[in-house]
Length: 165
Image (spheres, rainbow, N blue to C red):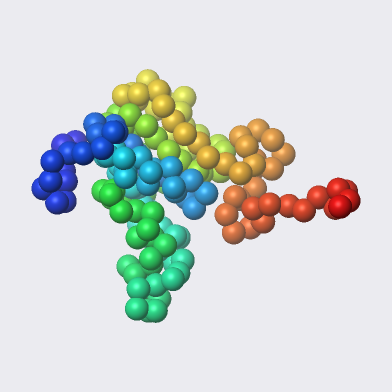
């Protein structure tokens, strides 16, 4: 995939030439944003129904609209985007081509989600252009909380009542 720049300016940044596939949700969205701001070529993968982060305010002009989410804009500048349904077989082939293209893959799915889709690291590693993958999870990959959603279903921090001030 050729690298395109919106502004037509000369390539800049310490990470120019690094190619990143961004599948991150709210808990990991800053990682690919930082890489993009440092010059990496980041492709954001968004499901056909739109990313849930587009529903988060505040909204430009105080008008709730997925295209006006300032939260979305904040974390997705400096990136390119593609709409892709990785839950359908036709999306699998496109996803595999993107993995071949990428040097780094960043994702925040529930542990095992990509494996269930037939797109887990063990399956894509032989075709990957790089061996770098970042999987962000609040509950870890194998601990008791690993399967719980990391966004919207439980607090980001818990209070331990056993600790007395």
